[in-house]
Length: 232
Image: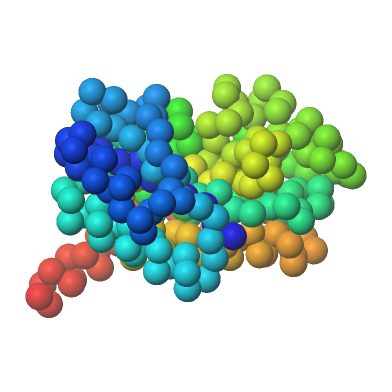
């Protein structure tokens, strides 16, 4: 199951009320978001937990409606995914953190630079030493996660484990805000695949560094964009 938090700007108060009155979105929550400008109708939509085709169909309906009604997603907006973690064991949480620490460089390379350098989606701050210890209980997991070296404001990491203590989910905060349906769905696939991997993998090999990966990845993307433009 996945639940979403989509930060956007509504064009005006009337449009905001119209969307919330739509019976299609009757189960959707809405709130002001402290990171957005409330005077410009900056809000956060919270979708109910769903899975499979129903999830994709519901998300397409929402983004289509918001785009049609002239909602906007600025660079200060975020797109957060809450993934069901009710059945996770301490060992699986450990594997999930190791996966995030290993591959978040790849994820950041796909996103605007400010997602990594800002304060709302910090990288995992744990080190190899933390993973050498046995985590036998949920308390062990959160004792390590809440260490000072994991950064100021432990909630504001790309991978937010503190959501589990309240919602029994893992919150993925890495992604920037967007109303592009395909981008949202692709990111949700990455989230779901990583959560599944954390429950099935026995171990994760953590490379020392992805030397220059981000620069190489961005150059590759730029070359493909230029090639596609020439073909068009």
